[in-house]
Image 1 (cartoon, helix red, strand yellow):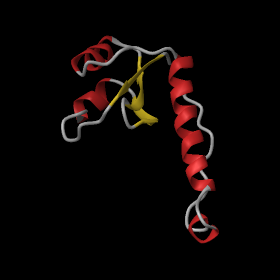
Image 2 (tube, helix red, strand yellow):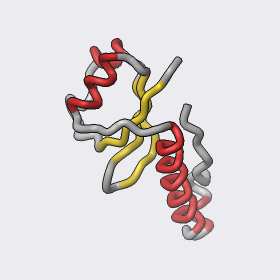
Image 3 (cartoon, helix red, strand yellow):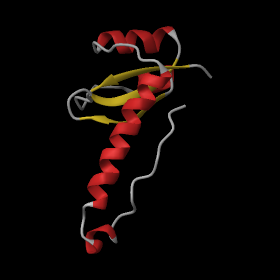
Image 4 (cartoon, rainbow, N blue to C red):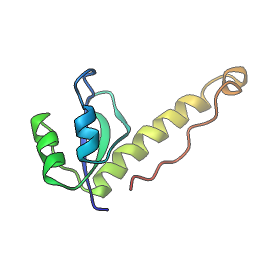
Length: 99
């Protein structure tokens, strides 16, 4: 399956619908607070329209991976800074590879 990538802030109800989920694959990955999460969608006309309707810009897979890797690295650094008692409550964030 071919994919397209974008970075968008999820604004809540209506950001994506059941119909969207039926029309194309859609999954989010960590991004940043300024620009939002990285979204991976199947590459078809309906997903392209969905991205355009939300003002998204297409990213390459490499650009999407760079954003996700930076988010995971920041989360790992924050976890590393926690006291051991708090670290014991949650596992350390692990690397993510976008498809």
